[in-house]
Image 1 (tube, rainbow, N blue to C red):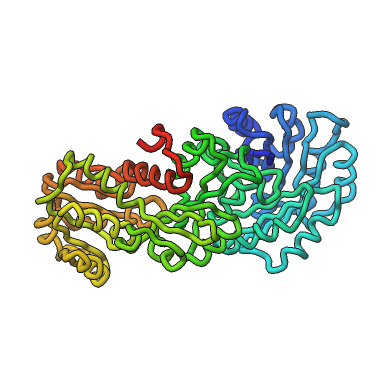
Image 2 (image 1 turned 60 degrees about the vertical axis):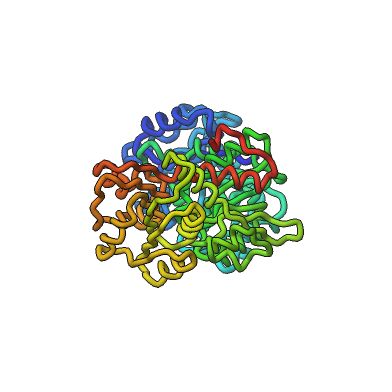
Length: 499
């Protein structure tokens, strides 16, 4: 199984040791980022492995490679040499690894490492995208069989991540480290075993320290949420497909916890994608068994489905896919049932006839909401920044529609028993703000914002201050996720996670 490494980015040795102690038991080794230390601390790194009490990597990263070291190569050489000096054979007092860049070749340092058991990680970082010729880059990095090649790239989309994975599959056996950085590279960190990497790097995100590299998760999230250390060659992979805001979703907490509780060898991870083609390329490369689909892909994915459930056909949006035995994809919509159950609980009613409601938004989520409200006999006003989109959705059900601006205040007042915010406005990682900032709540409205992170959006805070009853989308997320679990596994979901 791959090792989990904690990258230590503190300004002092003492600060780094304190952070390491916090995560002890969660990590297998530590990387001391000496390039980020205060100048007076840099020449104290020799004793760090002894103080850390577990295998350590020494890294003095140049700024050009994404690090913080700005002095010349001569100074850096002295720092590395002093950190490795006075090594003793087979001693845990030595650094277990030292990270040296592809163009940093100093025979004396390399010979000292080999003599005293410090393994060389030969690294190269591409911070502006993927290199065209991965093979030639890798040939240079892996030229010395005694060294561990490390390639870190910044994919510009899920399609490039798919390319990285497919390329890594052809490398065969051998120690290596392959890292996809940034939001699009997160799956490569979680699926290190599948990429053939024997180390995955993390950062102490809760400690207020700099993140060592873009896309780092913290050790607790890797272990407790994404099941790092449990993922093997037979583990089924499920994904959350959508825009970059999928990195903020809590659904991995639900699904991965449920897989573990049910004894199912599976992992669920975020796969941000700029478009449906990129996501589908990644889904095929990673051999996904299924996926949850969120904004902005709920409608784009329809053309990629070989089967659409009746709910998907009626609603015109899909939030759940599962791979069929013939290799195609079946699409379902669990948003509708999740919303209906949570809405009736919120309203404290089993029947909503006579209710007049406003829906903000006209995308995939709003389509599910509109479908449910129509079936429950609610009179609805659909608002959207693009009035023609609101009109297209509303006319399917004979509902009223308008643009989302202050000219619609009187229309809302006539449809204000319930207000459902079904756009991504206010969601972490999406457009900030309050989509109804121009509407004055009277306190009689029941306000439901499908966004659940943050727990209280600007809209909900303002509605609550006016005396309205409010709720966010957390219950909807749980209920729709339970339905997804049934579709993917054919089993009843553990109550602990979905009720």
